[in-house]
Amino acid sequence: MRTTLDIDDSLLTKAKSVAAKEHTSLTRLIEQGLAMRLSARPAQAKRRRAALPVYAGKGGLRAGVADSLSHRALLDAADDSA
Image 1 (cartoon, rainbow, N blue to C red):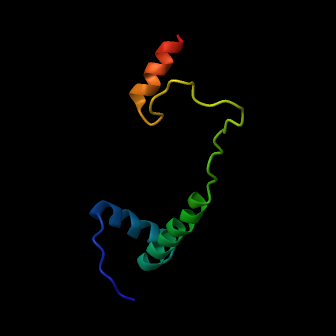
Image 2 (image 1 turned 45 degrees about the horizontal axis):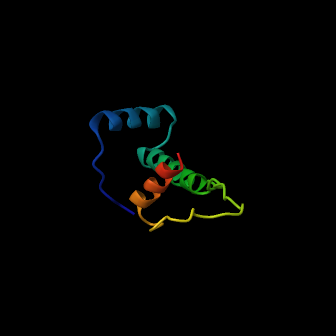
């Protein structure tokens, strides 16, 4: 398939030089580079997520916390315990 690419002049010059040294075409060099880049992506996506610690103990919020979704209420309850 034919396509048109806008490639930086210095990058294109280097690519042509590498292609000539390797006795291959510029098209083949670009195909190889693109294939390498695309094959590397699944390896990055396979990263495992870090397991976060989960508290499994007993207890819960202290009595008197008015709204457990309010940062201010939680901070006030923490200040009261100090």
